[in-house]
Image 1: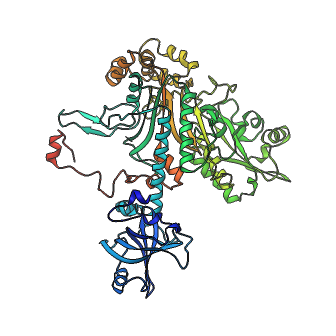
Image 2: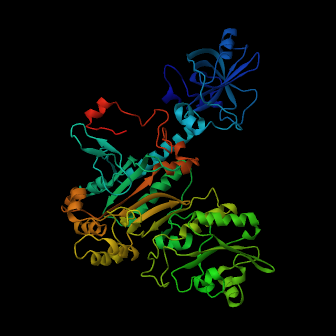
Image 3: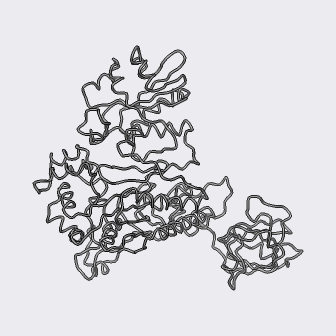
Length: 628
């Protein structure tokens, strides 16, 4: 590192010096992180990209003028110092360089800093300034060592990705940033064309169509660490522009894609965390994940698996349970070992947790030596009690939490149209997911050091948008339907006309599956992908199922359909959310901690003042007029 960073300004990186350098004459540059004036002695913590290093000014080796200059230094002044590396009289175990210091014999102030609007140095008990202020002065906030460590980690992760994909014979290809607007998914950011009045480019939400076309072109294996943009309402874990690791492969099945992606993730873990990640990752179908965990992104670091107790509990006279007889409603819940220790206040809180997931509330019961107590304790008598104990394994001190109502996914043999079909447009799975996560955290069941990955497969092909009152793609319209459901799709669109109304909803309720998949890590969706449609006729059938006629499909996706006519290979791919992956690796609190210049939740860049108004003459050049 010393040779790499050696310039006319410095011989070494300050934070890279160690006890082996004692006795060396060095020249260092950096920022004044902290200054301590002890009367006759002055100490300065110098900070550069390598870390912190103490510089001491002492009459035994520093001139009176040099000590005076050191006393005048302020926070974040940029300085150059020269001297000899020596052992410190008292070590500082909080610093990697805490056993050595620079005995300064010469100093030059390269730039004085104005008074700081936000501090860079702070004591451990000092809170950070408000986030808006830190984003306004982001270049100062980025000087914090903890943020620098996040970006060094991000760099190492990207390096590991590139190295692995290169070893797997992928070609890195850049796809256009100015492209055509696509009608599916989130809103596009639009860019007006100056030379084509009234026409607009769109900034890409993903390189999806281009990477499929690269497969048609015979590139076989493509990847890109690519910036994407979506004009959507933001949350703490979303940004309008984001980075994804995007890849596509020809002549592959799901398992081939999984093997490459798992190897890539394992390479990142090896590079960044120095840990070997077990592969292959577990596989769960969408229906299995929803039935067992209430979500398609389950946190597998702990148990609390969901059970269906409908047939058993319907036998009781408890009104909530008996009221489900003869309906599509189910009774589902899970056992919480040791949950009987929860206070009444904590048990009452479960009602609000369940309501966040759309349920009317949570039903619970505790088991103790003297029997059951709780909301549905009186339902547990006779054969029902015996069956409940047998199915749940309840022991003294345990808690059972349940939710009753309509669920989206039912298991085979429960009387649905199809196994794993959708029984309701919106189900109560989110309520059980909320309860499971809440109680997993409350009971201390989540191992923060565990890395639980899984693939979720066989997602629904279609979703229903109640606002638009129509069928939409659950993933995107280029996703291959599941082989076992292809005939149902072909029958639905056999007439060749776009589906509408009841036909569309019937197709949704039939529970058609796709060959889409997600990679889930500790309860977070980190990647999605699918086997793609490569047959132009099948692609047209999916468009018709989505209510899109032939002319509309040709207008929006004609270039893709045309390319498929000239020998498109079977292909599949994935996209990993790189910002989120880095955030979780760094254990950062927000995506903004791993993005150099992020936007606020209102999609504003506070530092540079974006977005901003444009002068009317500039708008005229773009053939745009705004309305107040």
